[in-house]
Length: 164
Image (tube, rainbow, N blue to C red):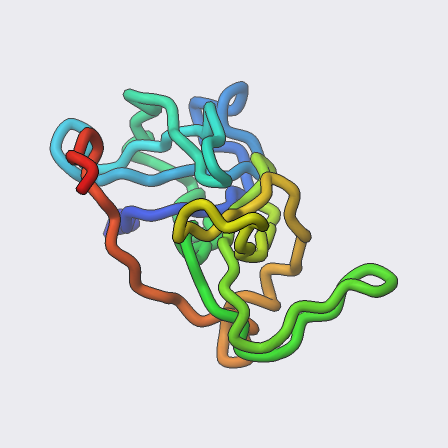
């Protein structure tokens, strides 16, 4: 039975058969399985805007025989907003408190990065600001039963929506 690909972002651990020059180990990729991408296509990151990747279209179709490539992928938590479930210490003096709002992003090499939410001073708008400089964390810190982040829900305004 063929491997059943699921959509989402992943870290590669092997070269993609028939596409070794394009899809190598230790890359952030997006798997799409909908419409023209079916049964599965690999999209590579091309541009990072506000700590979130845009992926190259149309992508590379996964070969019918993947030689175990699909099962070698590491599923990653989605890019987005989270809250810290516990204190996070980093570097010599860095410390973020429990319940802080953070944004999860990744390097091209699929290394997770956290960005802390900030309010700017002077306050001119009721917005949170996320720097483009974050702190790398281990994948084990953000996955599993002992994850230090918990997903938040937010409303995403549609592109071109009128300002109220």
